[in-house]
Amino acid sequence: MLSPSSFKTAVSVEETVPDDESTAEEDTLSGDVNGDGKITVTDIAKAAAHVKGVKALTDEESKIGDVNNDGKISVTDISMIAAHVKGIKAL
Ligand SMILES: [Ca+2]
Ligand SMILES: [Ca+2]
Image (cartoon, rainbow, N blue to C red; front, side, top):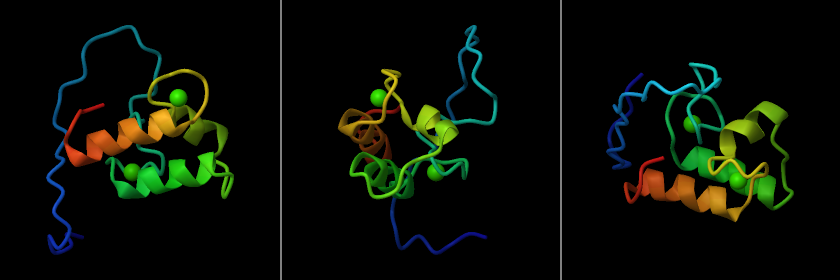
């Protein structure tokens, strides 16, 4: 299922999750709104559609997409996800 690397985003997130007391489900990756296991432009698009009112996220998706944990999806979350995708600042 590997696609040709026509789209060059070397965002391999291999970071080890710190052993904190978080109650987050193991399978959810913060910012991975569509739940495909990685954070890409697709997740940005989904979050953006939600903010614009084009297509609302489900409660679960909203929780995952709320990367700064302020209780709502906003442009702040989108920019944080975007920064992650661009490799500027990892989530
Ligand atoms: Ca994703
Ligand atoms: Ca937020």
